[in-house]
Image (cartoon, rainbow, N blue to C red; front, side, top):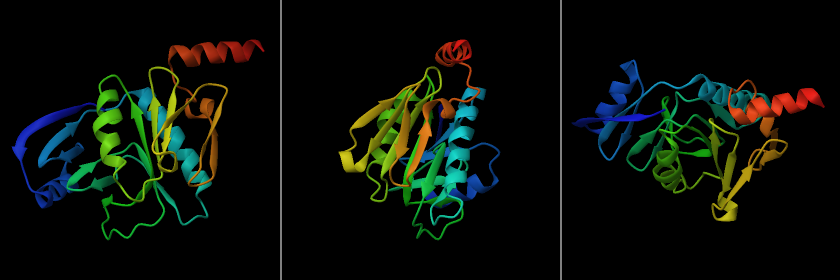
Length: 195
């Protein structure tokens, strides 16, 4: 989802109160609000696929998955990840957490740079965060960086599986891209059907 900057500078309390009644989501960075635009079908397919896998895996766990309507607070800033897992939430707030274990962002041309730089830096400063996942929607590439590996990235492609080590969940890359319409997936489906 692309961000559009609004000129007004507001307080954190004003931002949080506004988000409770807002029709559209906004991120809050450096005292400024940024409107989030809508997502594509492929973006929603990937977000839904990761959330379904997280939800099913964590059914009887203390860890809990959240979709894109719950914010994460980093310092004085607020972001809306596409999905996240929270295992020990001591935040006494209904609309955000400060203690995610896993954060997932689905990338597009308009958000790739922002998610891979500004958000990455912010998220990796969260003491509880163990894994940060970036999933491309226009082609198949899942990037996983882990705190235990000093945030070095590993990329996963079709035919591979990735393990979210902090929660013990292994997922096939093709399952994350179920129903996604991009050239990589079209070719993968054709080749799979020929086999």
